[in-house]
Length: 219
Image (tube, rainbow, N blue to C red):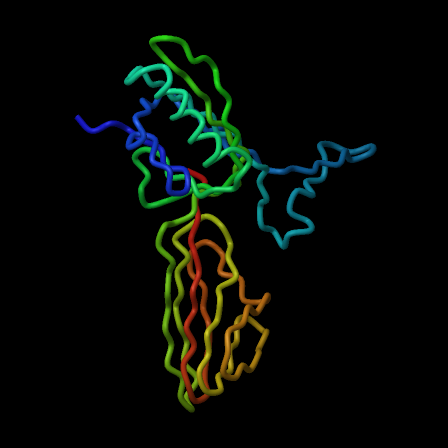
């Protein structure tokens, strides 16, 4: 039977001989800002007042216990040393069990719980970003000509994203009432925010524009 594993960057815990215990990722926690209504009922919800209605989330905590009883104590000590030197204090992409299509990003700490004659246990903890990012980037390619066209672009994630725009030629873009004109190069247009779900983007000109973005979910 294949061992369950967590991958920290290029460090695969099962391949290094570790047995994964009951790991835990804390729930997403939205940043909120409620202001009491003086003399009135309830309170004002200002949680997204400064983010254009987009919810923001706090970092999450990841705890990963790992055990090993193979080899000698000296071999296990070397295994621990290798893990500490490979991971401690570094920011890594983290792939969880059963979620090979997504990853977390966070900074890690390796704590040695014990290392005796028969057994060793370490706990890898991390302060991670709230999002599970898709392992695959989404790419939308548009070919512009003199006729204004409308592209239907879907963000299947939960996180609003600003795509990278790679342009050849000379292309005009419009979303809502905002318009920009871009020539050859790579850009981020802050006005072009792909909210979860469907966005409509109008384009015209002579050339191509490629939108590249990474979807993300909370769970």
